[in-house]
Amino acid sequence: MQDGKIVQKGTFDDLLQQNIGFEDIVGAHSQATESVINAESSSRILSTENQKLADIDDEFERENHTDDQIQGILKQESAHDVSQVINEKGRLTQDEEREKGGIGKTIYWAYLTAVHGGALAPIIVAAQSFFQIFQVAGNYWMAWACPPTSATTPRVGLGLIFFVYIVLSIGSALCVFGRSMLVSLVGLLTAEKFFKNMLHCILRAPMAFFDSTPTGRILNRVSNDQSVLDLKMADSLGWCAFSVIQILGTIGVMSQVAWPVFVIFIPVTAICYVFQRYYIPTARELARLQQIQRAPILHHSAESLTGAASIRAYGRKDRFSKANISLVNNHLRPWFHNVSAVEWLCFRLNMLSNFVFAFSLTLLVSLPEGFINPSIAGLAVTYALNLNGQLSSVTWNICNTENKMISVERIMQYSRIPSEAPLIVDDHCPPNRWPKDGTINIRNLEVCMMLLQVITCSNTKGKLLLLNNEM
Image (cartoon, rainbow, N blue to C red; front, side, top):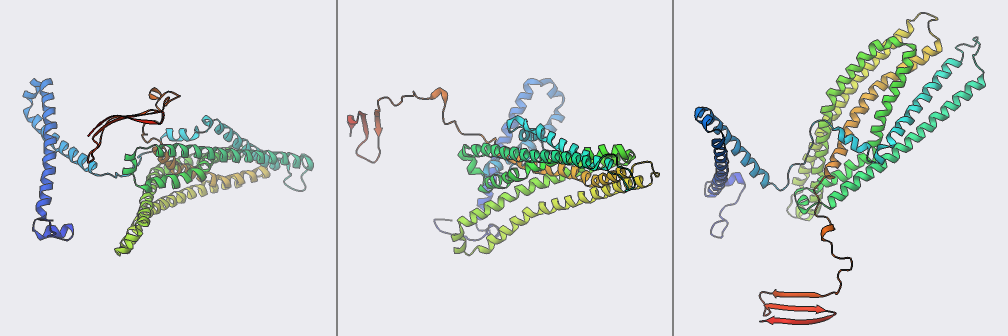
């Protein structure tokens, strides 16, 4: 604009290339910004120098050359800091907050103790432990009591065999039922409590939060992250503990039958731990990136639906479609790399599991005849076969729980939003019988652009009394 008329029209780069005045405006803005940076830098450096002169005057005289170098570094750093602050203050919508590093123990502890202080967690672990004990006892009982061949004399009667096995099976079923009920109940109550805390903080958040936070970020947490807590978090954390208990039961059976297998099992377990520690940081950061990249899709879709009429009127449907596809691609990139990392881990865990199973089977087959009961050897082979999947299951469940716990972390971020002033302030509450008389007093009311300038009136018991009126 110049003299009230449009003199130039085009993109930013086109206007710069025309060299007919637009570059002067850009240059003036750059000079103004640079002057602000220099002013802030000089004032900061000056205050730093004065403080140093008051404290270390003698040392400053002896190290002039060193101080000159330090001053140059301070100027560069202060100019960078001031420019960064100016850029950050100039942006109303900041980048979405993302934690870095491992999931803290406080996140796990907050989730476990959200309902009844975590009193139900030991009961769930005990139920799973008894289930594993009953299951191992039932299998061991059948392997010990049943004769290996038809010619062998049975140790106990057939009725007793079935009775003991049925009792152990019923005990296992009751433990599984109790464990499942408690996991579902605790998971539901925990998810409900986290949702209520987050919703309360969002509804009580100051208006500045909604001005600087896109709608898609809020929708992403209350929909996707909350659905993880509702449907997956309790099961993932439960199976993480259950798989550990199962592998402990398998180790107990193997130690009674084929203890030399631990010669190879312990190193393999150490290798699995190394793979787990190598995989978890990558998968954790990819999961965080994937969840962050989902919010722009929701926000863009909501804004596009709101302005659909304007988009069609200006013929910009292709532009918004391409922007949506670009956002979807940005969301799928970390997902693709996360799937690749999962395949990387599964391939190595399966290789180690097959190696342990082959070693265990070779060891049992090579034992001399009569060294071990064939029924017990078959039981050991069965548990050795399960050991493959259990070893992989422990590592996978730990990694999967770590990734799912990111949703708890993100919900807790929105549960710590600074709140507005409380609705009720105890020290400034009116009396319980307020208002007592129902009187309204207006004193020295001034109204511009009207004949009435100053008025004082009172409303007492339904009667309006005009006390003063100045024209």
